[in-house]
Amino acid sequence: MSEKISRKEDTPEELTLAEKLINEGKFVEAIKIINDIEKKGDLTPTSQNKSTILKSYYLNGVGRYKDSIKLAEKAFKESQRLYNKKQSVESLLPLARSLLLLGEQYKSFEILETCKELFKTLKEKPKEIKRLDARLARLLGLFSSYKGDSRQALLYNEKALSLAQEIGDKSLIIIMYNNLGEDYRILGDLNRALEYAERGLVLHEEYYHNANPTNLAYLLSTLISICIDKSDLKEAQNYLQRLEQLNHQEDNKIIDLVYRSCKAEVLKSIPRARNRVMAEDLFRQIVEEEIINLEVWVKAIINLFDLLLAELRITNIVEIVDEIRPVIEKLLEIAEDKHSNWLIVEAYILKAKISLLTFNIKQAKRFLTQAQQIAERFGLNKLAKKISDEYEDLLKKSDLWEKLEETNAPMSTRLDLAKLDEKIEGIFRSKSLLTTQVREEKVAISKETKICLVCRGEVFGFSYACKCGANYCENCARALSNLENVCWACDNPIDYSKPSQPYKEEEEHIKVQEKVKKKK
Ligand SMILES: [Zn+2]
Ligand SMILES: [Zn+2]
Image 1 (cartoon, protein in one colour):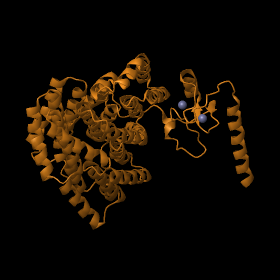
Image 2: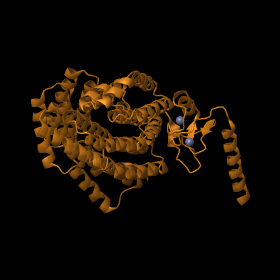
Image 3: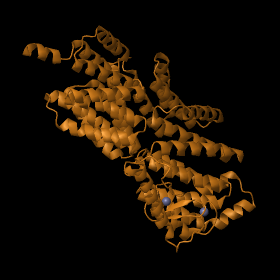
């Protein structure tokens, strides 16, 4: 009896093989085995759940993140029902990764926390513990790099690398060489970056040749970025050629996206008008598609913005400004959707600078105020300080801007004064897509909620409500009364001496509650 049970709990050989194949990126073979064994239909609940988990890894590997999430959630529920802690951890890993790549950082963060806690309670063989620990460290590294903390990412990635080396997991070793290469690139240590990425490529060729194409695509993409940063365009083009071949062979959304993004970056870095037009087309294409990787998407939209600015500078055609505005609106829309606070603030700064180009100084000031208030609200203090310096700078240069308007100065002069190139440089370097601080932002905005017109946050407690219906949080009302002291919606002065509004709100709130009670 007991023998039977223990045999039942063993993972069937086929699934062990499928797992190995998935780790090596041999997805087609793996999914065939999984489908075959599922068709037979005699799997135990535990094995069936393992099969679901593997399918989730597979979907994650081929870039179908939403489908991967659905299966991982299902597998997690089932592993809880089965009191199977190992499978719980195994199902949370692809869940967290898919959520993160789609930009759902809050959910991803919570899943990672749960996963860490569960991991501590595991009682598996040391090798199995190391295998899972390495995968967890890899994810934590990815999370840190999305947050813009490349040093922290480096530590996690080094841990994952040494664990992978201990258990001889070749596929993971290669991924970690790639990730460490990217970390060092962001940190500006290009020689070391190249060393790691090249080591990854050598190892990949030694073990996988044409298998594991997604990993190869990431490696080539890292190498291309490093070469562009080193101004070695020839080498960048060589790697791009290999990536093009790979994309030609494979039918894989992620590889196609990575290829187009790299191609556009290489084209952009070759200073010929024709290339830059082609790069612009490619970036625009990526920006307009459904987002399957937030990092690639943000890179594309900032590059597009950069190219349009360069065009504006060279051609002096004012209409290009009208082409730039919707690009920033799109950036803002996605930043808000993904709760990327840092990106929201940057989008407002860009809006301010674009307003300057058409001499709308008042609007520029307001956008800067918004950027600063939002930065403060989210605790992005360094950024808030920078914006306040920008504001001071703008005040000092007001006369200069007026002069430029009078003489209808060329765009290049306006761009220089607005310091837009510097700003874009800064955004490229930051890379902090995510901010995990303000959790209250998750709260869905209901009809009852009052939203501050300036920082667009929920208005709690003391606030200022203008007669026109516009709401301001206390911070923003104070900031505005110190600045222009008018309501942005109706231009009436913000009367700061009558604190009667908050009480009114309270009364209304109570009335609503009473109504609800009566209904019961
Ligand atoms: Zn506010
Ligand atoms: Zn008003």
